[in-house]
Length: 208
Image (cartoon, rainbow, N blue to C red; front, side):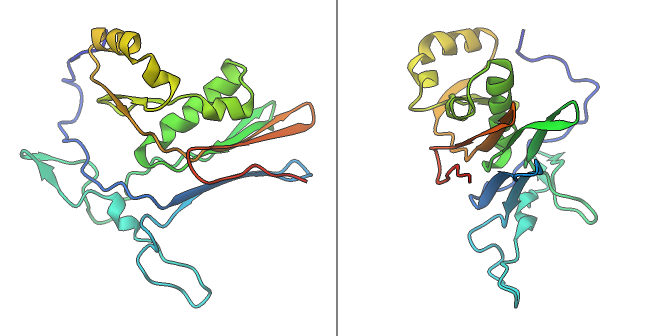
């Protein structure tokens, strides 16, 4: 059961303290030759570092993916800013293969919750056999090693009482909140493509 298992083998590090900034985008593409692309891109903050190249590209301020606070209560933060380090990132552009060929292309913006958004969509489509749009629309239930977030305004919230009780009985803290993913996905099956886009943000599924 969940609760407070002993972590005597783990490093003594404090929780992260980096910023969550809303300037990430994702595209999923499959062309007529079967080539697949899943690309998540970010400049971290609106207009990034506010610097632009002669070619018209904004430069990012990805340094904010680090925690500028180095310690909390005397304990070091793993994602603290240090020379030679890469910042923590949860971007998860994904191409699912079967027998060496793509069967699903998916990804999302959403900061540190991206992994949960993408994993839920893959499971809902491939394991639960929901169509690709239904898999995207399926309510989010996200846990980032702490509070269990149930997506507000969805069936996850309307069944909060029994679900919350079950999670609480396992030792989780539960909270209802907006979970603003931006999933874009394509399913490939029997030579057919099916695309879906997340109603939680702007986006569209199109094809020739």
